[in-house]
Length: 447
Image 1 (cartoon, helix red, strand yellow):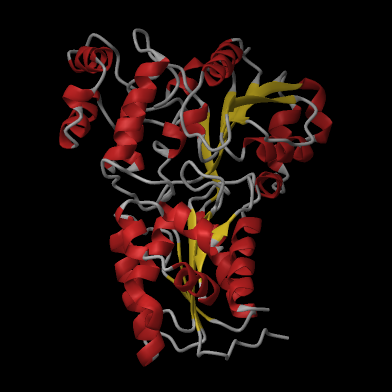
Image 2 (cartoon, rainbow, N blue to C red):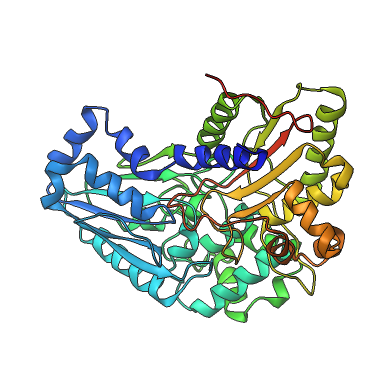
């Protein structure tokens, strides 16, 4: 195998470890859990996310004796498929888009009605995963879908964190920030969560539709002011938040009934652990930096480039052949004339620019989104290696120039560095892999 093939194999191991059907099915190995559902009058299934189709499949596989009383729907990206019999997959947005749609609103309204119809012996399951915020839209009274799209675009372009974005989403919604759980009138609501957020905060994942919400209307306004967006918001958004601050609109719930339970069944740490195991099997000394990496993408790349240089030159903190692994989710602050790409492509390009041709000798950098989508592109991310550098030199391309206009997609499309996996059916943030070895001396896989 080549060094690039090794990097791709490590990335694939990370994605395979968080396949939703397996994660859901594994949870039901507890013999007590199926009994809860066997005694239920009905099993109502709702949810949203990029992993929704596979999670629904896993749920049906785990409860084959209960299919006759199971019904519901999950909002998923267009093109998501699974071999499900009772849970309807509702296409709620096009692939490559992270914006809410009318179709998403229709599905969400149906979920609210379904949970509101629950009887005293009905059990509900909510399946949540990355992308759930955009796939579960139901604007608050007086707020249009266009208003929500406008504010979402402004927040993404400002470099706001996912927690900040979701705090505002929750206070402009009928379903986020605990309000989906508030609609449930049955016996027990179990939410299975595949986390796409650093630290797995339940109130942030998919904007916490079934979790207590610690954020407030006051904080939402403060976030918009912090990024100088308050006066740029639609007037309806400002009026709604001001009404909440004044107490004319109820706050999101800060505590939930004990009949609501949230369970994280998979996350970025799960993926990184599998990646480290695969790297070791391929003969690398693995350095797992964990899943808590946040910040501006270029700044993170600068720090990681320093670690790679130290390993390559001094064998610190680990000896070559080495594999640096880390996850999390960084941000990209776009300029006034941004190009095309996503945070993973930008990270790889920033590493290439920082290390330079000499510093990339014996180094492979791969950064990919575990969902198979990186920004508004058809790529999961990008890889930089000798092949990319050779093509870059042939075309006389400057990484710095493409980086300055956030146009990593065009750079890697020209140099053969894009990673196109298609939708993976899961989402636990990003996995970044840096392989470092002596030139011409790849490690030997373990027997």
